[in-house]
Image 1 (cartoon, rainbow, N blue to C red):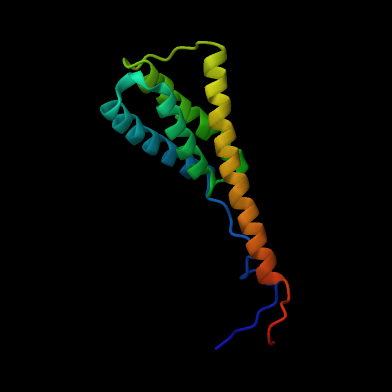
Image 2: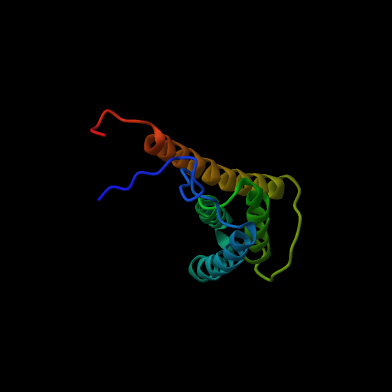
Length: 137
């Protein structure tokens, strides 16, 4: 059975709402911790570029359900785990200038790109759901 609804009703949302920012940051903390443990166990501090690539992928994945406002915090949390446990193995936070700024920029770009991709996919899907098609009524 097909149920027809007007688009103006509050029950129908053509575009899904993003996840709350604190939940995204909590997931970033938990996931970055797990990734730091796994990466330090597998490769040690000898492969910071691999760790950066993995954390960039994780930040992009976290960007999918997140709002744009969660991207800076997600990038910061991922950078803290990268810098504190994967580049310097003793848990010391250091600032090396341009390399750390570039790492933070890459993490932020990954989080924003993940969010942008999700928003574009949701917008296209909403457009297809709300645009009258050529099919039968």
